[in-house]
Length: 137
Image (cartoon, rainbow, N blue to C red):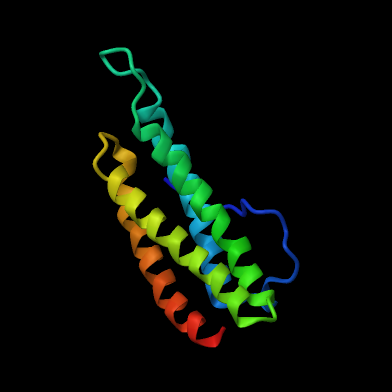
């Protein structure tokens, strides 16, 4: 079963952070756990001696989710609209990639893939927050 752990370094008082940033931290923690759970199932060599290409998607979801938070903070700390929107576009790209990689991982042969719909649901919630967040930038 997935355990909720604080996987990120302490980033100050989280009461001061936006809802989208907090959701990004939740998504990161969830992707770390899912990746940890899926990795043993896709880390073995295939019958033809090659590695399972899905092993890379497990790392990709972690990398994309860990990048969400810093990009959100950068967007929120910029003074000029053009810079804010540059980082906001990066957040949008990362969330889209994360969602697509979840869909790819749902095709693998692993019991861990049962947790991916939960992650996709959290990404959908993130996207709703993202739409409102973009209006406030």
